[in-house]
Amino acid sequence: MVHYAEGRPIGDLTLRTLAMPSDANAAGDIFGGWVMAQMDLACGIRAAERAKGRVVTAAVKEMSFAKAMKIGDTLCIYTHVERVGRTSMTLKVEAWAQRYLSDLMEKVTHADFVMVALDGEGKPKAVPAEG
Image (cartoon, rainbow, N blue to C red; front, side):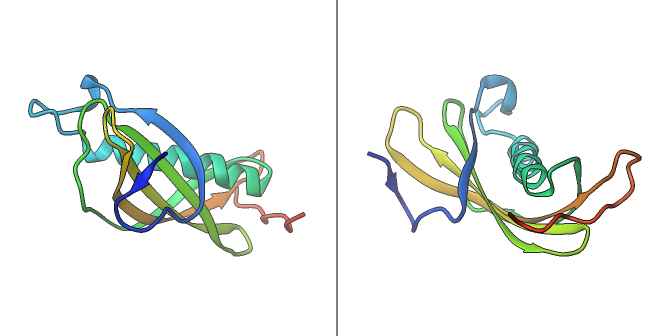
C-alpha cells in the first residue's frame, strides 16, 4: 500500500518510470530537466488522447522543485485536462517520487502545460468536442 506524504495526486496516473544513474548528477540527484521531460511526455500522451491527434507543447507555466529525486526512485506523473480552448488545452501535471524500496510517495514538482492540437500540416486545429 502506497503512503502519500502530503495529500494525494490530482489527475490520472499517466506515466511511471525508474530514475537511473544516467539521469543523475555526480551526487545521485536526478536532473530537473529529466523530470520535466517526463512530464512533457505524459502531457503529450494525455493531450493527444483528448485531441485525437498530434499535439505540441506551447508553454510550461511556473515550475519549481519541492523535493529531490534520487537514483532508484520511481517517478509517477499524474495529469488532468484542466481547460480546453479552441486549439489548445491546459493540463495540470504533478510529478511524484515513490522512494526506492519504499511505499512512500512525495510530490517533487507540479506545473501547468499548455498543449496545442495540430493538423497533418502542422497547423493548429480545433480540439474536438469530448465524447
